[in-house]
Length: 310
Image (cartoon, rainbow, N blue to C red):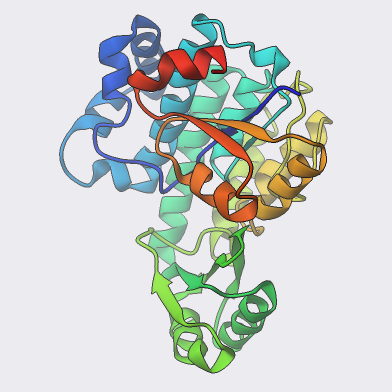
């Protein structure tokens, strides 16, 4: 069986991401140039300049998307059979790259959407003090119980079910303080704040979800050419209207990454490819199913093996 192609989400960004690909491949340079044209500013400067710009939600999101498209485009140019992939999926923001890869979203539309999504989420974060908290080693039951503790104080919910022991809750800061205080009493050895702008995948992002929903109404979404698995349900979706709804829901809904990967594994898919940036998804999959094989295209040095399937 052919392999699945997985795209990372926010958190995979790093200063200089994509620069090595652009220096090595004209195709990657063109993808960045096209994105800068659509955005109206130099994405290269924003991603490659030293400083914190690349970590801002409104820069990180288009940056991660464009790096993923650039790398996938180089792979395809080198012979990778995109239409022959077993399925595609992306972690949160990565769904936009997966939908581009599956032929559902046009590049220009996707660039505009991820820029709007990132900016809207940045505004929502600045309007309401909020954040995300990783519960190290927690079970699903412990995470939901702790989220209920936080919800007594303010907005709080389970945000990411990424892998066994890799669960994140999200919400208002005052709610997260309550979760931190109660974590050990609920058997969670450590609760760690994530360096993010706000409470993603919680009701703290409702203004951003509404803004994105309005933008999505005018975007053409086509049926994916290969199976696309959504974070919202952890199962494939092919109806364009359902994809549209899920992209809006996804901003406040929990990310069901472990469920998505278990669905893929249940189909007999054992081989996965993760284009840049980073190797976050390879790490998560090793916790979900250690025997699964994940190939990386994190750097240009990986390109020949990734393109050929070696």
